[in-house]
Image: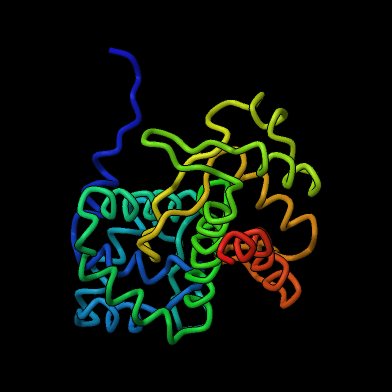
Length: 244
């Protein structure tokens, strides 16, 4: 039998709702104490410690000693990508019902600084995710830069022309592996955002322009005031013209 990655151990660790809740609370890249994670997951401190020990032993969490305090964070960015992929799969398989753990986490995140940033703009695989990305996707559709067909997303001639003025050339993107453009389900927004080579190209444009920065140890993007204005302006003029 050919070698296949063993995912059963990770699946077992994430199958427990309480452990999933603690993993979800760490998705913004911050490190949290076991007492805080216990509270967020609705566990006693001793039960939380046992669950955190299993997650750490399984390689999903990293422990940081700060004096007498122990803090936990995701062991690697790939862990966050995997958890978010599961959340997106959950959104696709049951689009009308969001798991209660996710609902609580999203609600709490709106009142927390780092977690709120995760919902606003984050890295999703190699492209932009979050509220900013979902809004941009809708504007690109409304402006006629992209068109949503039954099985795929295509970049229109108008979109190709407009993107070329910003240094993004569709013909060059078409040479890369994978799709030029696709819709990616966004677990926090319950709306799609733009994936594929075009989604990755736009994120690189935003980074190179200094509009967003990628902090260490976090998937939440830091968005400058200028960047937020410029990204929100992208395709907006054309959208307004079509509406009038």
